Structure formats: C-alpha cells, structure tokens
Image 1 (tube, rainbow, N blue to C red):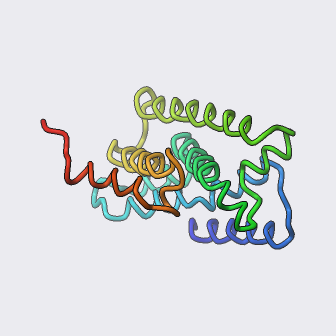
Image 2 (tube, rainbow, N blue to C red):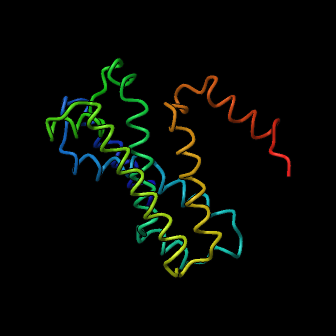
Length: 183
C-alpha cells in the first residue's frame, strides 16, 4: 500500500518536472509529503519489532495519525529548504519553496521564515501526541516515528546533509561514536 502511494507521488512529481509545472502549495504538499518517504520508512521500521507491533499498530500508522502527518511535513519542508539552491542549479523547480513563493508572491527568505515557524509548530504537535494524548499503540511504536523525524531533522538542520554528506555529517557521527558524552 505505501509502496504504491510513494510510486504514485514520484510519478506526479516527474510529471510536474516534465511539464515545467509549479503546482499550488496544497497540491504539492499532498503529493510531496508522500514522496518524501517517511510513512514508508515508518512502516518498514516496524517490521523488526517482534511482538510489540500488532495489526492495530499498522492500522494506526495507516490511519495517518497526527504525529506522522507532522513528521511528514517537517521532513518535506526541511528537505526542500535545505536543497532549494542546489536543486534550482540542476533545473528542478517544483519544491515547496517555489510553490509557496509563487502562490503568495513573497521572497525566498520570507518563505524560509514561514517554513521555520511551521516546523517549530509541528514539533509542538509531535510533543503533544507523545506526552499528552493517550494512544492505542505501544510507546516503542511511537518512538520509532519520533526517532525517524529526529534523524531527518539532524540531517537537514544545517543544510542538505543527505545529498552533501561532507564534514557536517562526519562531525556529527564522529561526536556520536568517538566522543561520547561521559555519564
């Protein structure tokens, strides 16, 4: 199910690129929050969890809960803002940055400011889901979703650490494994 949805989203994005189309922000986000792959990664990450994961856990995930929706939007906005300059240099245009700028007639910096605020607000939604609302799934399932977005946040916080791994990610991995915090 998730593979098909992701493939469909990739197709829509390829069509936009081929046609030179910049969709509305709403249309873009509907497709791009699927193509970013977080829901697919979340689903796959549950497979090795043994008895903790039940049919209900997968049904919960497939219901697109608030924590997953917020994670998908954070992942997409951070991915697009981190890579917008290099993607424009490669001739790619239909990112959330381009869609928002075109739709609202604002500058790139104004768009980035709006997205940064939106990301901070979405973290509040994630925290609410984790700390306040009772859930039908075991806590380790929630933690999988949380940990995936934590990784993506780290990868994209200071630029496109996925496409351009370089020194940034090397320093982070080094500090994690070679310079651990003493307890």
